[in-house]
Image (cartoon, rainbow, N blue to C red; front, side, top):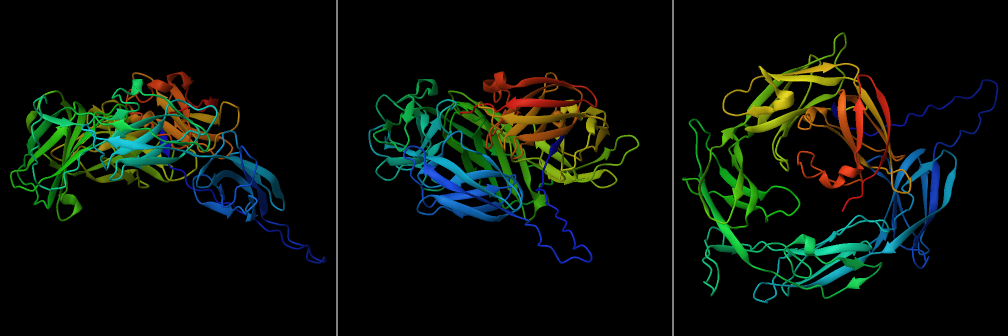
Length: 546
């Protein structure tokens, strides 16, 4: 199955010429207009200085600014269906407002009224574990649960030198307030020895995320209700110290390794929810390649090293998963390898040519990893080469740079004698074996229509088609599309089999490689089975997200 990379559509207009023997008639209008008003959803008063934008798909658009009475007019708009967006500092768009508009040539779409709600704000102070104000603390006001009465949102803020923060532009709704602090070492290259404290546990200490009113367990966080225009104050939090450990190791060099200008080691938590702590980084300066991370909270991390040379081929890297417990970890060793080229060939369906615009995508197998892999254009003869692939474990998928649908699907992926479709691709020392990707004609097609809980079409929604077990790790079978302004989209070239189909609002980020990422949304997925050549209309309701 292909992951479509859609391009913007072009509108082709053909002008009719005059009829012989007659006077030249007036040329019909080629554009239309769109007019209306933006008002306060509670008072009904017009909202001045709001920006009204009409967009085609995810591309650019045309916009206007409302006058003192909240009125606007967009002229010379090409005919078509558009996504409507309204932006104004201090306001958010009320739920249930029109998301799509249709503009017709020679006509004015008028009397459109868009309601905004005043945004709220949450403020307070953050104190350290000793009760002193602390700067540089990140505060997040995150959605507590799915919204049914207002547009969901999220606020961010950072404390100043007085420990004060203010998160604003928050949509009405229910939220949780949290504070995360990662101590900054202001003395680069200096190992700071902290003073001993009475009753302190041995080892180093760190600061876990704290939720209002003062818990490190997100499930016990208080729900804060933000009304339209509310300015909530006094949401103070005090950080807590907890036991942390040290992680030390070194980077080994292999024979023939290129000369490096730098080596950077990072230790990042794996997963988005309940992450054990912030990402740590270390710049290796000494010839021994030693690194050390302090104040690491228990949890699962990805340890990665990146080395740089004078040019891209000299780059080296390595990574591994590291489980951090209650004790210091010593002697961790990473041996980076040099990037390799990965070549192969795509075999067209029998009796057919390859569709244009094909791309081969190499993506990391590990959830949350976005820093490795590669992409290559497929030639007319099916050949491709992905350069500078870092050592690691990958999956293969395919994409297209064109909108033209094609029913071909991936039947097999082989790497030597290995089944790369099921087992993935390993890139390590030595030249990687070539890939062979076999396409077969007559795949399935999903014709998707996405609506919200009121039955209105949802533009920009992300539709994900995920294979059921035991094929759920086979990235080449995964499919997705993004809905047009009318809430519809289509996925072609679906490999026969059983799937779960989900629809998420625009901007939702779901890592399908994470087995826990979709668990909260399982009840919103639709079970679908595709046979070869089968076309299925799918009516999907967008899943509420936090």
